[in-house]
Length: 249
Length: 245
Image (cartoon, rainbow over all chains, first blue to last red; front, top):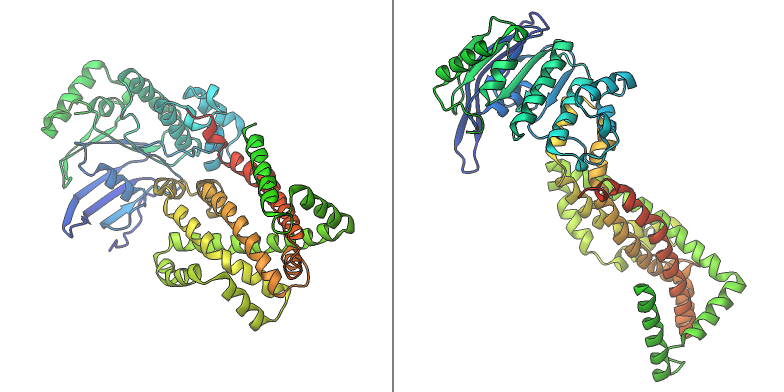
């Protein structure tokens, strides 16, 4: 099904999904993705924006190698993959620190301490996740993805269902972490504000079956963007997607 | 405190029953205690308890190891589940007595035959419980283990096993009680020592006090195992829950 392709630059992400369909319980074929093709350069942050339920998570699972049942080819950056799922997916029976050490036994104490510091988790290192709020649990999931110093990072709606100020703070923390150590990143969100502030390249998806409506490389680096730039990027995304862009809508 | 009251009520009912039916049918607690002391002084009590306990331990360990492995396999692999399920139903419904008698006939009146027969009786229960636990594993955490390339054994130890712990504890608890009941039957039928053998002798002599003496002594041992081993294991395995609101 997934034909071999010549390997080019091993640092880039190259996605070519021809078609992805499910068989539903009633026996119908339900098409989720069609003709998704894009490339991310090394260190580039691609942000996928699209309506809820359009198949973004399905796409991420294919790219992460969790779902082999699709037509097309995926070339992932060689090396370690870090991922933040939509739910925190941390081990409730291990402390925060143990959760982090489980994926990165080689990571030193200083490295972990610095990461906990950035994410405001220092005081919670020895807590069990059941004692944490959703915002803190999300931070643990982020710490886990960053502690392995990934060569490729996948973030599936890492800010969803957090209140606005908290989401903004966490977004800044993510930005700080990717600025500290550039990594090819694929971020999925339905919040155009996140997209405009974090992305180097924006991919606007349609409703199901998801296709790419627009691919927008953003010329200005993240740090140099003014509020005006962000507003115009947001307007552009909204314009290209043709749907109500308000977060949570 | 409530447990002590409950225990006292039990002893009172026993004494009353003994008075009503007579020492012959139901010896009083004092008579049974005297019998326990007598058996303990001769050393027979400790020897037989030890022998039976060793058999319980061997059969229980064997059954839990095999049952957990098979249950996990059947919970994970559909083919194994389909192939194993009819066997499971047969074994679940095969009377313990049949397995023990056949084991003794085919393998002789040996220690190995006894322990294997007892283990075979327990295995299907463990399989059913662990299979249920395996089916309830969180697929999201399996995906997490795969994405982060956690080595298989490590993922099993830290991601899978803690999720199975309550099921393993449940299987252990029911297993312990099942195994020690069946051990007595196996001893009665084909072993020259152990609590079951002693009860068989006492039965032939209609020595009810001795029957009760061995029963109570062994029950006390099982209770001690429950309190000293099983409950602390459960507390340890669910320690992360206790602090959760």
